[in-house]
Image (cartoon, rainbow over all chains, first blue to last red; front, side, top):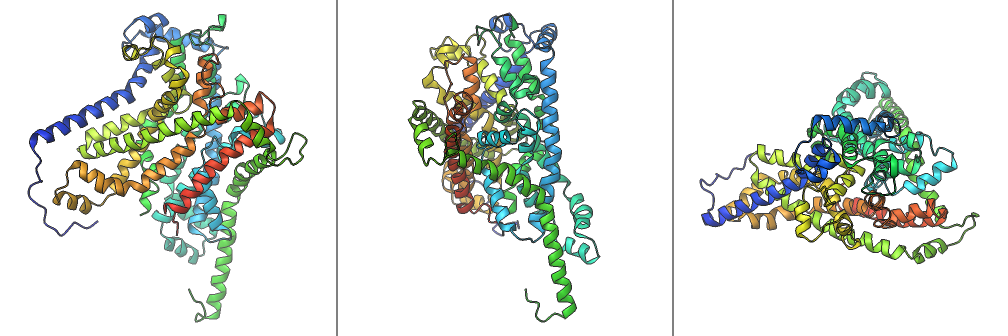
Length: 304
Length: 304
């Protein structure tokens, strides 16, 4: 954007200082209140994992328990169904990981082709992608179950990996990236030099696409790791559950929520610890790629 | 582009190149098209097929829709989801836009950036984790805000999760996890408003309120619509929140609360696949229409 030719006015239009001050205070108070709202539950969760159940009920909610209690909670948690939590984490990593690889192998060439080549049905495919992308992923869970049941995939890990791998948002992001960031002439030049179509993709487009590959990978991983409904329906056996569903079942083993559990009980601090463990991978990815996220969520805007 | 004046050989080469490109384009999207058909088109067709037939596979017209709508849980579930959507969309529009405007006015780099990130962190707890955290926060015996709950007159978990409170509680949970991402999006859109426009408003003597109301919010319209449509389609699919709440309250609250739960129940508790498919088709129609309307009318996806 070119600087405006109008000379800047030296002084701002002033409002009465008292009103100005009051509005500043109001903004500060509102922002502070919402900061507490967003942060307090996370902080509480982290601290809860370090306490005994007794401390949780009777102590200050925002105090640190002890390393010893944290250790004891971890031991009790892993003792539940003989290391079930570790198995769930492994499952989550496996499902989200394999889906991630397939998603990238499928979505990046597709987005590239939609943006940079002409073929029959391109326009229709683009519109279909946009519509499916805006549909929430819970919409198709029960129909997917019916379909996969007919081909006997229910109860196998493919019943969630394959649906996860269908990721129209990834195709859209790649499409946007190529249309905006990579000039078509560059590819045309390579073609004139005798490059095959696959060669153009492999040697010219792909090296330029690393930012969007990271972006698609990030969103796909987070979406799959946090998905609950699909695995809940497809993989009902405890030893196949991803950690999100597993933690949900832990909930029904907490006596204060479900008084009928008896000796298999899990205490509340252990449930808090399990929740924390379940989100840690996503949280870590979040902390290291905040920039990506913003870019991705603004993908629609950067087109203009 | 006209080719009539070009030498013959170049015409042939160009058309050969175009054909080669078409073939390559088709090859690049092939895997994606397979997934799109397998996990987008086929489940939709499957749901429609089941919704209009009975257990023997005979065509039954709208019988399944009538039967499910006459189920004593259907109308209440519709009402629950409707009320929840109302709360959720209003809070999203008012508070997210308000907070984004405030953060944008702060503008002084560091603080605004830190706050946006803090608001965004609960997004990492999407899915089951956010519900678990809020079950704790809403349980007066362990809550960090138990004094606040007590001041409102709620001293037991059962009182807090009384059925009348659920739309509000689910709104709070959804807002807590989802608002941060939307604040980032709206903030980014605010940044895209040309400096000249803001400068002009200031020179004309517009204060913060007037600038927000007459300049910024009208220019954000497209993004607000985007947010509302996505949140509407997603909110209609409510599942994990009531499902986990019903686990935590041993079925007292949240059982058969939402339409997706009802669909799940038809399929897996009552063995009425056709009824489940009918509810799914209704939800599909809602989210497909929302998506199609948006793609067609918003101008967001004017790809070419």
